[in-house]
Length: 326
Ligand SMILES: Nc1ncnc2c1ncn2[C@@H]1O[C@H](COP(=O)(O)OP(=O)(O)OP(=O)(O)O)[C@@H](O)[C@H]1O
Ligand SMILES: N[C@@H](CCO)C(=O)O
Image (cartoon, rainbow, N blue to C red; front, side, top):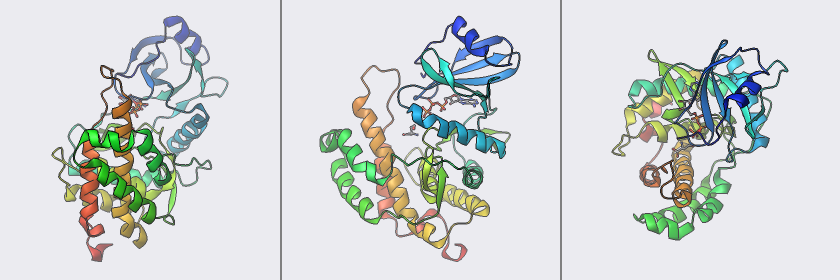
């Protein structure tokens, strides 16, 4: 459930008075998501998402995220468009939290991933990278390679890893050293989404109808974003890698934004890093979520298996790209 902050009728009416959207007809908390409080709001003016930003989002980052969504929506990327009030402002305060209204996107995220979804995702991701290329603001990735060793310590380090079994602590420690030594620095980059998991991509009538949840977006390597998606979309529930899905994702991506040879060569290490990033944030949440909390922490073990897969690959061919087609 993700409604941490309640909004009463008087608060909502006072908030809506800043807009030309008429009166509220329906207002309902949305259970999905874990970071922020989201409400579905219907007014005379249409249907909207009202987001109240909770503690995990740094208010100083909000202009970057909101400006990015505005930039992308203006370039026809199907993302929530920030809705300004009469004063032109998007961000205001509601129930003691920073809050903003966004356009509602039709569609639903796919519960069962097919290769076709991965192809559409590849095109949408590349389209997003190109559309964001002239976004003038930057935001450092606070969850990239330099952050992983300190994050491991904050997550409880070897003791926390040992508690999960599977030789996790040895793998993490070996891998942190390898990633620090071999992480690529000079690949093409720009704004990346950094969390484009299936629950952040809506489909309708067989096409992508929405990209949401830009609250990890940052400036980093494009191919790292691709690696995050390979991990999130191309493994089966039994943890087997699905090369058909990966090939579809990568081929669709490069039709819109071709890869350089050095980006392809770096894919295995980028996939290892992407697996490490989610392994560690999940390990952290595993340690810090009180038992009985309404939000169930995600399984770090899933990302250990993905990491182990990428540690074994011999090159980018493992992701479905033939040498001749690179
Ligand atoms: N613009 C939108 N149009 C339609 N539905 C939306 C929109 N934005 C959010 N939602 C709905 O709200 C849910 C939660 O949104 P989101 O994933 O952004 O939550 P969060 O708590 O900020 O992030 P996280 O997924 O990282 O926990 C989504 O799964 C979706 O159902
Ligand atoms: N997508 C993340 C959680 C939200 O950021 C994960 O699956 O670990």
